[in-house]
Length: 441
Ligand code: GDP
Ligand code: MG
Image 1 (cartoon, rainbow, N blue to C red):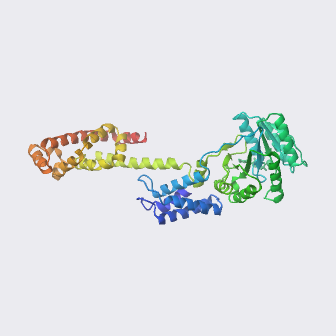
Image 2 (tube, rainbow, N blue to C red):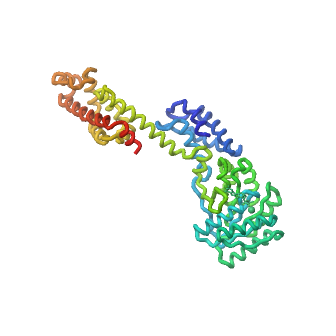
Image 3 (cartoon, protein in one colour):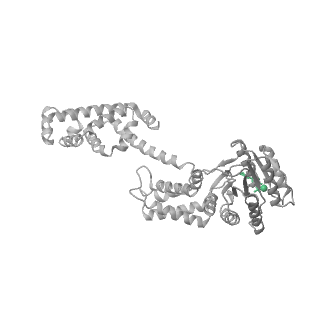
């Protein structure tokens, strides 16, 4: 999948600053392969990659994300945007009855989706729904809708083989008006391939019932073909939305990107199974993750950030446990790190007793204190830094003179060091398990 592909190409180069053009090209090649594997149509892939490349050029690599993850994040965001950003609800803003026309190839799932949608509108939106089949070529198709309507408890308007689809739809609409129905769903016929006669028929039906929603139903397993079919239907009738069915099969979601790209219309629902309750509102980010080939990329990235913190904490804990212990060298190093404290502070905060250490360090950090502390420690001999208890009165005077401060400043520093060392010891004695628990929480 894309995640492992990108990791391979990009993560050998440790991230600094921005992604280079070379890196982006390499990543784009992997993205192209991944999109092909996800069954996205070729022209769609080209357009999409151009967009991602343009965005990737300006992106900074932060500490906690590898270049691969940074690129993946761009892909995920761009996919989500391309797929419509947010979920788009069904539109029923019309003089009732609001007519929904179902269009699509035979076997795409029109009749099944008609039942699912009727059920949803009835149970969730408390709508009074009537369904009708204009599939006058197959008696089984009309019967199928009758059964589905019975199962979900909505009214089925009768039709029969040999009647005119337009006459059926018109009669159903008149009936729905008389019944003060909220919604009329018109199920239609479909051929196995696109043909002119079928396109003419759906256009006539559209003109006859003036639907507020014309939903293009497409089997997500048809992959690249979905783009061609979508174009043919979009040319025949003004589509308002898409239903992507059979996403529960081993569909890799590529059809979503293709169909959205070709029609420019929002995908409104996903068919996720044969049963009448298996209809889901379409969430672009979820399909984006499916196309990328990763359940939940964001959580992985968070995980990684946590791991980085945990590694730092483990190193610190190791150091505290070692015989050497915490000395003035470490203390000085800490002071020098105070400037880029952001990450360390958040790390220490998570340690048992961390809040106190933090307060202590903030205290030291106040004013010009930090520079002074570093200067004082610099004036000590390596031995004094390792064994601060050696520092008695005469040494204090020497150190104070060397660093241009008063002796009481040296005393103050030694007290601060003592407090910090005590804190550190407590942390170390708290043990690894506690530390890790603290980090995980
Ligand atoms: P139509 O010819 O467009 O009306 O297609 P149908 O509604 O008759 O569906 C064709 C086949 O696809 C039927 O066997 C359905 O049960 C099946 N089907 C439709 N939608 C889904 C879906 O979301 N998931 C699965 N697994 N099967 C579906
Ligand atoms: Mg059907």
